[in-house]
Length: 71
Image 1: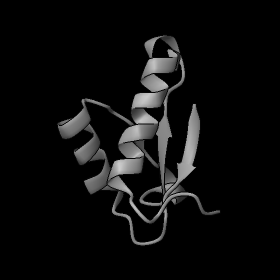
Image 2 (image 1 turned 135 degrees about the vertical axis):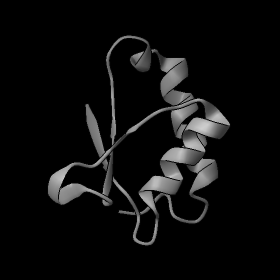
Image 3 (image 1 turned 30 degrees about the vertical axis):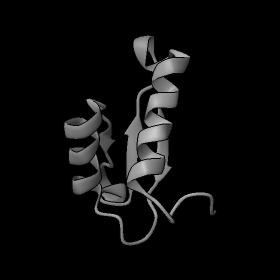
């Protein structure tokens, strides 16, 4: 499992919905104190196949233009 902190102003619900509807990629929401601030990405089985990892990274790059590449 990898947890990714979302850039400020990114709505996790909208992001997860867009990933599933447009790219058929499902990621988990943050739990507890991290709800709304992070997404959880599973890295076992088919999720860790390089093609699927790159598909997720490509989708995030398209969804989050101008918000990637920072710290």
